[in-house]
Length: 115
Image 1 (cartoon, rainbow, N blue to C red):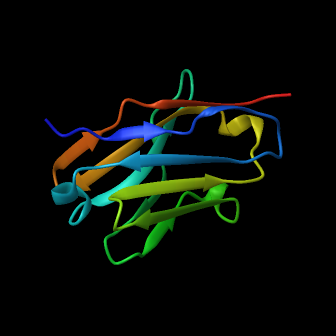
Image 2: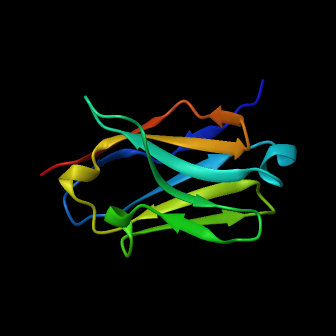
């Protein structure tokens, strides 16, 4: 069983920042597309950002310029730096590892943006 271990969620005020981390097994991290998804109450899970092993990234339009996804290949860890957070960013954030039809998920971490 593949285990993706997430950390870094919490409560933050609008305009604040948080950094999420996700550690993956080396054999997964080195070849899979790593990404972050989120799911708000009553909404479908959506892709926030993704990064391939070579470092190319992809972002949802609503987070461009505010969120940055990165990876540390020595630590087998992917990060999501979230700045200028808005109340609409409130959701459970999930780490994902994808290779064609294979998908592995983290347990999810709550991010709440509220004053």
